[in-house]
Length: 147
Image (tube, rainbow, N blue to C red):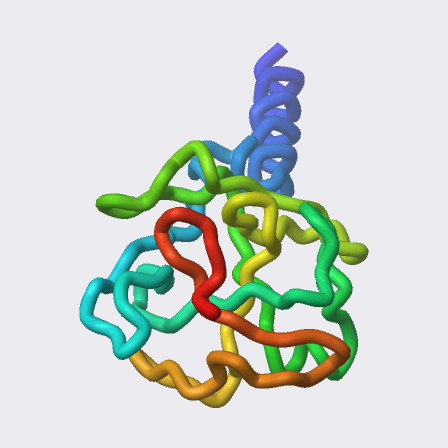
């Protein structure tokens, strides 16, 4: 009997060790989307680290068209779990879409969100840049794109 109990305990520990994080007890974290008012474009979306967030006009609603080289230059804003709304961000506009690889990309007002790879904290260099078949624009708290 003790051998059987020991075998069961070992099997349980092995299953928990190999389980995805949500099953092993650690809750997935959602990307934090917040607003910074002090940009040259007025209030706009940034991530929790202060990196500017863009939308791509070539995308379709809730569908990214930015893959390969495009996604290397303009990395998607990914999340594990539900994205979190910072102060003054409309929670009702936050959502996600599944990418081809199965990862979840954050959306705002139905638009998939991205960073620009060569920007740092609070830098906004690529507003109104035309590349990869569309225009990259920063996003207002209302969900509208800055013209």
